[in-house]
Length: 128
Image (cartoon, rainbow, N blue to C red; front, top):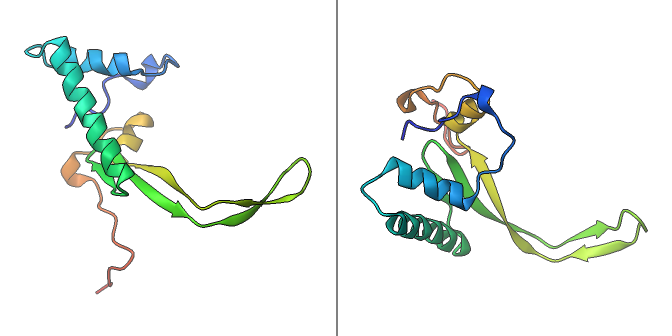
């Protein structure tokens, strides 16, 4: 999956990549698939990711990032206009942490080979 950065940083357009753009990229990359097959594969992948997140599971995509669901507890918020305190109900929020490879690509830096990307140490790992 070494094709993280297809567009050079100088080619920035300010355009938002849409579902149709992603489907076209899949179709152009794999011409043996029909457009309908490419769409079905893309939709299945998105559905699997969504289902995992709804179940509260994390989704880690190598060279891309980690999607995770966090539970937030109930807390007291404040209306900035009136200053009145308002309870904020507990909820689950979706978070995304980009991989070092994706961060490097976004910043226009040389992409390190995946074997050389530093693996973050676990917070619970003991130092020897």
